Structures are given as C-alpha cells and as structure tokens.
Length: 125
Image (tube, one colour):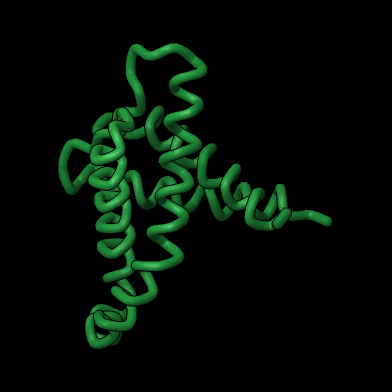
C-alpha cells in the first residue's frame, strides 16, 4: 500500500512538472490551487491505471516492433498511454489537455524520467 501511494505521489509530481515544463500540456490552467491539485491527483491515478492495465497488453502485442526498433518504440507507447490518459480525463471532465503528438512524446519522456527519479528518492525504507 505504501509503495502504491509513493508511485501515485511520484506520478502526480511528474505530471505537474510535465505540465509546467512542456508547453503543449495544460493542467487546469486558471483554476484555483485546490482544483488544480485535485486534477493532478486524479490524472495521476488514471495514468497509473492505464499503465498498469493497458500498457502491458500493448507492449505484448507490439513485441516485434520492440525487436525491430531496438526498444525505441517504448517512447511512442508511453506517448500513446499519456494521450489515452488525456482522453479518459476529458471524459471525466478533468481539465487536462495535450496539444499534439509531439507534446505527448516530450511529456511522456519528462514524466517517465521525473517519476523514476522521485520513486528512487521517495521509496527509501
């Protein structure tokens, strides 16, 4: 349970950082701090669920592409998972928007790096 909460916090901070760093990712712009925090937490939760359920299936189905591209297809899959998170968030009326595939690709890279770094720092027993 503690590990799951740490991953949620790391994903939330990584998504917040990506929204700040990548110009094509908008997270509750113009909203109050409480609304913005709620949006970021719910988007992080959706992103975690998408990565836990859908991403392994997509990776399995695209196994030949992993071999062909020497693993570089991972960046595209991560961007597609972020785009799927945006689509689900929009269906749930969360204010999270991505402007194009380039922003999704850069955002997925930033989220992956920041989340990995924060998980290493926060997951110390």
